[in-house]
Every structure is written in structure tokens, then in C-alpha cells.
Image (cartoon, rainbow, N blue to C red; front, side, top):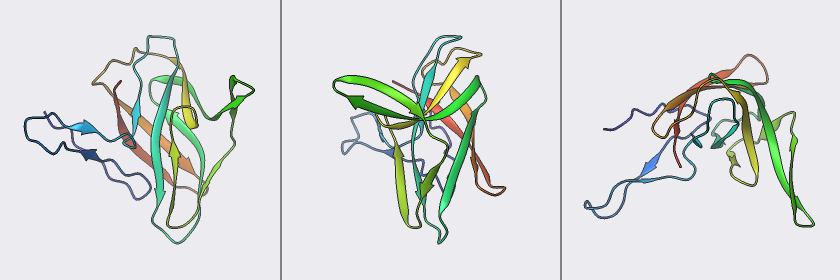
Amino acid sequence: MTRPAILLPSLALTLLTACSSSQAPVADPDAPHMRPAELGASSALYFTLRNPGVDTLVLLAAEIDVAESANIHQSMDHDGMASMHSIDSVLVLPQDSVRFSERGLHVMANGLRAPLLVGDTVAVRLRFRGTRVDTVRVLVRE
């Protein structure tokens, strides 16, 4: 079954298909997704934020429908110790992109009010400086 993709100016939702028709489609690592998680646990949101416009985008917050809270985080490695810290905003210059990925910039969803199972979709709202809010449904996958 093919899931519909919502294409927003700031987010690219794409799937790469395998070269051979005998192979299953391969998910694009930049396609927005979350990892499976149990009720009450945390999960992370990964995506690439693209700015095709002429003005700088400033991402201020993310809201995830199944999470009590969501925060923009940056993962770091200092002397072999991994840590995360909160980020207040993310700038995306015109004609540029910022990748939210494992062990890097990501959105942390805390206090899940429902388990996230592979194949589920989750509503995410990205709030930008000004009044702009982009809403997208994100796939849960490994």
C-alpha cells in the first residue's frame, strides 16, 4: 500500500525506489520519520528541513500529537561521552537545508501518550518565526 506524502515548501518527503522491480522500495534516510517506542517513553523525529525561498527560515518549535512535549536537541560527543542539549531555534538560510538526524540535530518527543509502532503515522507541527506553522504526517519506521 502506498502512503500519500504531503509536500511542504520547507520539508521534502520522498521515497527512493530500488533499481530492480524485484526489490522493495528503500526508505530515503532524509524522509521524515520517527523510531518505534513504548507508551510513556521517548522517541526522536528525523527529517531534512529545506528552504527553497529567499528569506531565512527560523524553526522555533515542534509539536508532536502523541507526545507530552517535544524539544529541539543537538547530540554531542565529548571525550567519548554522548550528551544532548536543547536548542532554542534553528536557522535555515535561503536555498539551503538542515538535516535532523541520529547523533545530530533532532526533535525529541517525550512522554508518549501512545506507543509508536512501525507503520504508524504521527502528526507533527513545525512552528516558525512569524505565524507560519507547517503540519505533516510522519511515518514510524526502524
